Image (cartoon, rainbow, N blue to C red; front, top):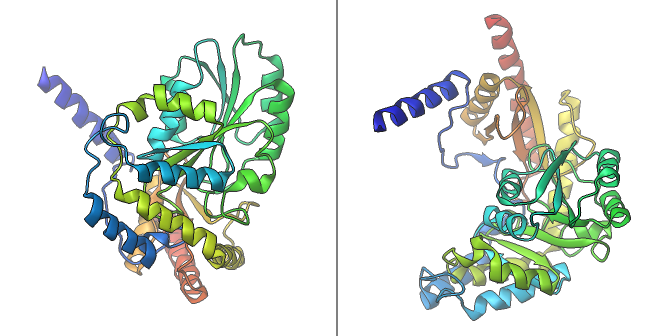
Length: 386
């Protein structure tokens, strides 16, 4: 019987290879233009120092789930701190953003409910919905009119939810959150927002796009906020009203049945939130670098989204071309990775450039020059092989 499985798996791997979709882990090398460490907090001296001190004090592992022996007061303290940042009644810390989205969407929506999900939502949101007993309706990406029409026509007997990201990770575009809030209010729906790529980066206090958009007190139910991107550490917070967080704490399987994160991470997260509050210049410098790079890319003819976020896709099209372009840039000392299906739609393979506050204008000037040369070489090779 194992022969059958092995043959099937080898066939699948061969298919991936033939389509240019086989991936291999590769450690960081060169100038960082691909990570999600937008504010440079992963190596912030205070974050590193407090993590080391907490490791010496608390040890490496939590030794159990939060409801068993894995809980520490430091988890409760950092949850209160994060809830204060988001100005919600409570927050709950999970060991990854993936688990947080699974928890929210597999626990709160029930059998007679319906969840409307953006077509470009992250895999963790999609998988959470697959685990849910609720009916799922996918609406076109960022299409407020389509969502409003679907909400008006739906007569589900239970609760209606709308699940979106505030900043989408592959196209770097923003969700029309204010319009979604209005549509949800009219329809009596509840809004769930994944702020993975926005928390720490947007808003005067770094709280994300929810408050910056002005919808925090409107129809929002919960937000999922990854701590391993701009906050530079690991895990994720679900923030929202106390009744929702209380229920997740009791019934969300990814929380109840998962070993808690290492306790020392709470100390590192506290240091990261201190830096977000005390060093707004990191956000300001990041946004300045975004504007600088977009101007340079426009001059060499790279099509750009109207949304000026720290995530800038360079659409290549074919998988092999994207891999070849990324390899050429890596050879020149720029760590850029090729993004291919299923992370993006077929035919839209790309480079996903993500900026961080440690990049200088000189770094970006050099990068654009090399990118222009590599784009010309890849186009020449593609034309020669056609």
